[in-house]
Length: 350
Image 1 (cartoon, rainbow, N blue to C red):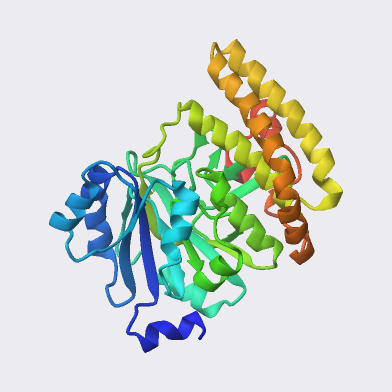
Image 2 (image 1 turned 45 degrees about the vertical axis):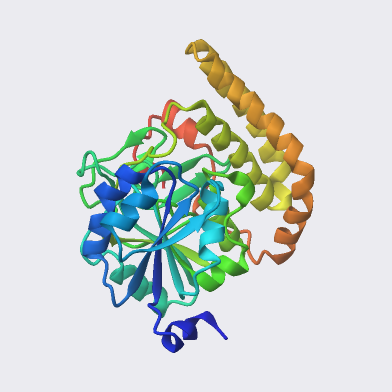
């Protein structure tokens, strides 16, 4: 039976708002009340998927949020596989993957669900993501929608490299994007499941970019709808200066390039990325961050080790792709635009 009819048959809400939690009791206490307050209970079910927490998260949920459904996973599977296991237990027509450090606003769900409802070609979307600590600013991880340059470096409407823009309404129009942030990802459940969900090998970081790129290659669209706004703290699980985070970002970026690039540009792009990664490692050494440089080389080694096991995956994905045309991928280098040409606002490069 198609998913879209199950919620009618079993009195299930249309949307599952699923918050993956790992040792985030304080985050739940701080941010979950806004989700409960501002989520239409006739539209969405709020579900906490606990990723094997060892703090008092489950006690907090039981005592302070007794009405919230909880899915308990037996260990920490990471962001990607944790969500896969949790969402396998949900049959709602729409999933919203929401970080535990996100504050939502009134009617944050309705505009996006309405647009997804009426557009079968749109598979996923995100709201405007602003910084919780400075609510006039966009937030680094998603801003007003995500893009890539031709070498795989992500940037956003509202954030280029480390330059985050003030929100003056300049990106308030709905727009087609390459990827929607995993901090607040709206996605049709049938598409999520047909795509095999997030890539569990990624563990965390860039898994949503990979998923969205796979979806785009199948001919669907990804959108940003800034009419809806949420506020994201960011860095809740791994801090920005974490060597582990750097390793995952570099390794996973190489994996998503290998999986999703068309055959004609794969080898050329990967050769250039090798040179760019060497440059990154050298810059870390000059900045007296030898451990960060080491993580770049570890990431490349891990990628080479995983690459043979991804050959079949790549071949299958390429056989099912319906388009190579993605104007949301910048024909050029965002690093060149930023550091050499001084273009530090999204409007200057797109």
